[in-house]
Figure 1: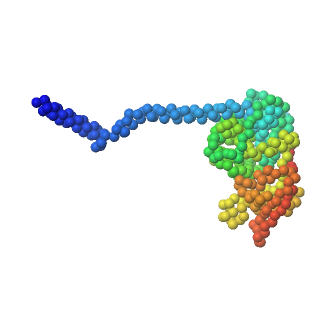
Figure 2 (figure 1 turned 90 degrees about the vertical axis):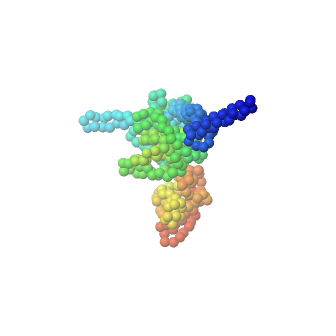
Figure 3 (figure 1 turned 135 degrees about the horizontal axis):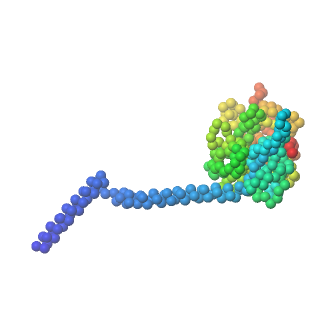
Length: 382
């Protein structure tokens, strides 16, 4: 009797189990119970909270990196002010001050770097304003107009100097931080972005119908830069200067440019050694023929000479308008290895071998190798 009761009880429990199983499967819309799905459902809320915490932590770390760079470098960033005097027939002379650009301290003994176009007014009286509001008159201005760089001297000591990075090691996508005198009014404005491109060629003008300038091998960034930022530092996440902010593109958002800091280094080293800017000089203007242009127009790749200036090493060597400089000292000329870059790596008095193609403006194919002795670049000191 007991064995029969046990069998009946077993059957009842089996029926109950099957009924529960059917209810569960009907609720979850399938023939099987997905235990993994049930577990995931129970832990999804926890995972969402965990992901939010991790994401917020990453954001905080990125913010901290920028804040640390700004705290470190801001004391070395200065505003460039120009004082001009205008004369009116009725009211007489009127003096006005205007913030026109940015610079940064490269020596504790009062050397400041900016763009040459920031301090190109012959009639203006320039001063440098530190972050704490202290103002110093500029005692001398040393210009390298070809590179659009200027070294200013002020009578100050024990200043906080920036640390220079290496622009040859830049990677597209890495962090870029710009500090400057935004619009000439807002001192030490910070903008951030990334390095959008390297070795860009840029033709820039003031937009007022003046002469245009070609910048070679510049850094492209989406960090916002405006005329007041010109001459200010472009920084990496370590707080090192990787570029000198120079230009932005009108009508296009998030496209700005900076001169690589490695362009400044030999100029600064020469100035510290000689007390003036000393650069080798060839004496031409040219347009770069890229690989794509060369293929499309069936031209040699290199630098198309548009002007040979009189009484220069280029003129003495026999370079002519229309020549294409293909190589200098065996180095191919291209967007990453421009004539200006190759020449800047030389010294005054060096003899260079210039391989040219003279077929572009000539009916016959002619390849020549010319020798030029580099001379000191004519620079302006005020």
